[in-house]
Length: 252
Image (cartoon, rainbow, N blue to C red):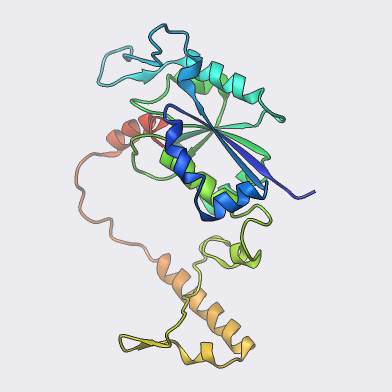
């Protein structure tokens, strides 16, 4: 039986995913029953008569924090919608960095529940109660966890058999091995604005082409691993970034 994967996205804005699931490879994978994406509104599980899902943080401070009750109830209810209950993923900058190795692990799971935060993030008791797989898409803060969830879905589905047109595509691309960057690609026309396609790619010599691609990949990989100047700092510090990011529990 072919391997498939199901994503359940838990969010306050499920409508954000309406257009996303209708795009190219993902839409094709859904129609072929290789991938499922279901978006759930956490607000549907709140017990507050005014439909509130957030409240002011204890200890003071700006913004609002997502309350534990609607999030926990939503997760438990969604887990019962299908079998297996799935692995809960909390998108947070305090989590494990989303690398290709992490993507490979995620792609082995038959079902993933993606928790998308908002505002100043999740009440931390949610993390303790659910013991989620905490994942960060980078050292930055988004307005919510929905875009990071899309990044995760996009990267994972590429490793599901049959989603890509050619299975070798995933094997040859950047980061398929640690530190590896893919070789440069060219298509028609042969000359554009005075720049020509490397002659070796037009030779028809497959061994020579493969050798050139390996060399170019190695050259790009070495260049990419060269330390870069961090550049000017435009504000914030490690503490600020981490705390805004803990809120990226909040966003990502």
